Image (cartoon, helix red, strand yellow):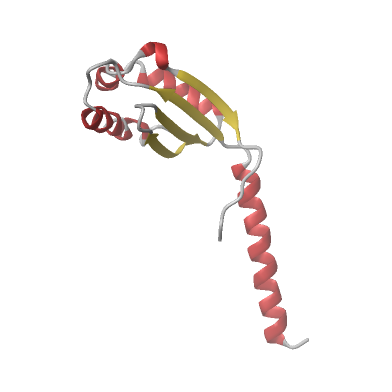
Length: 128
């Protein structure tokens, strides 16, 4: 083999092993999934805007990776938050309950509709 071929193979092998390491790290991430609806009479745009303000608090929490908020035509919201681990998610949950601004947003949520779970990623796949 010539030097160029060896160099190219080395780069490919390093790239594959980095991808495997990243994938292993991701497999330890915790997903916080919260489903809920707003209280009756709250405008959906106002509600969504209020929920988005929580980003300012969440992004400052150690272990936070990403957040996705979605909703359907029936007013069901799904908050999908990715954390480095369950401990980080639990610490953030305790802190958020002490935040006056966050509690103002939570006051808009129909408490009876809340469904919350924490799970660990068991499989990861994405399009390259």
